[in-house]
Length: 137
Image (cartoon, rainbow, N blue to C red):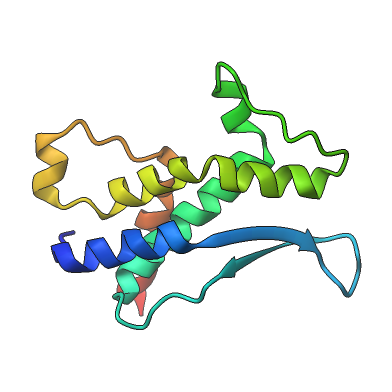
């Protein structure tokens, strides 16, 4: 799938400005709820927003499961005694990994053949599932 360079630039800028925070659901006080701000701009194509959403979900999962810290040679320490504060700290600290995934996910076919693009397996599966769902509609 190929996207316009200008659209890719807007999508990456949006991802850079994106703030992801986790908190407890106010209704039950037990369930974790991820909030994303700001809302995506309307001029980014829906297909690109789907790629960003998949990458954000993957990023959240990696932070929550401590995959980034496990693979990091010298992982940072938030110093907090609160797991929610820790998760928010790592969501922001490892944001560069989210940007890498978004850039890989939005790379054009030409970029893919020229570079050694390696999108995560989770993102590949989610994109294929979304594509199948769209075809069924």
